[in-house]
Length: 318
Ligand code: RIB
Image (cartoon, rainbow, N blue to C red; front, side, top):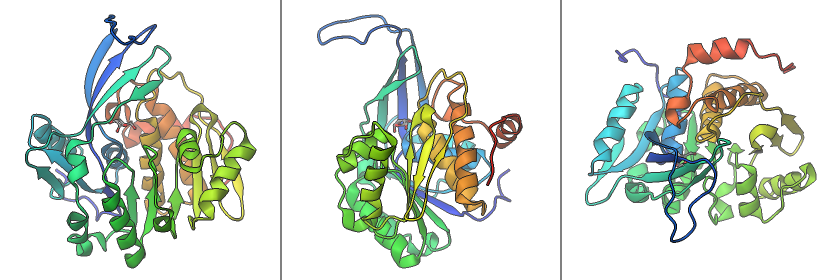
């Protein structure tokens, strides 16, 4: 069915998780307390997998490099990628490790708190990436997050540099980074919490966010895109800073919205669209995903997104 898929333009080197999502109403249990939650769902997640699936749903053909455990979840995760039309050749199975899992807690306003237990994701090794050099040299974009081991991220950044690829790094979750590897990254896209953790700068005003972004630009990143949830996003580089509005929707679950945004953004960039237009469409794609429960399962396919997006009336002038 997918034999005519186009050549991959984006390589996603990163994580996958099984999302174990608890929905609750009023309060979160205190230590020693047992209370009733409202609902529970299992879904496919992990920031890397989510971003890759967003690309696939929009019609792209991402090259996915990730690792699963030899447990109950590993085969399911692979099956899910296959169902999205994604080639599973580069998915490593790590014996003796569990697959990544993410217990997620969603409150009545749709906001989430997430634990990640990376399991096999932490065993995607630098050598796994280096041995793929010739395959990776075929793509145009490298897409990375921080749910795998940092050595692997660094080796991949060096390889991208050597091969002259555009890198989109979503520094999620925030971790202490060795700044020397950031030199030359095309787009660094933290949310406001991550920006604060990474730079130590507060993010309560536009000026503070700009300060944090400039800290990153000084490390050699070409563009910083700070995502601000329902406040939209802010693009900063050495010549401009530009705000992008969020699309107003009735959100029920924001889990994975950041990944919907990043995946869509990279997809539109890989289709040759400009950065500003890509950010705008990605904002729409992320907003639409919050109107449904779940992570990947809340991501719209191309037709649904295009129909919905064409009805939105935010004025754009790119
Ligand atoms: O960004 C949302 C994702 O974060 C979830 O799917 C969860 O698996 C964690 O990786």
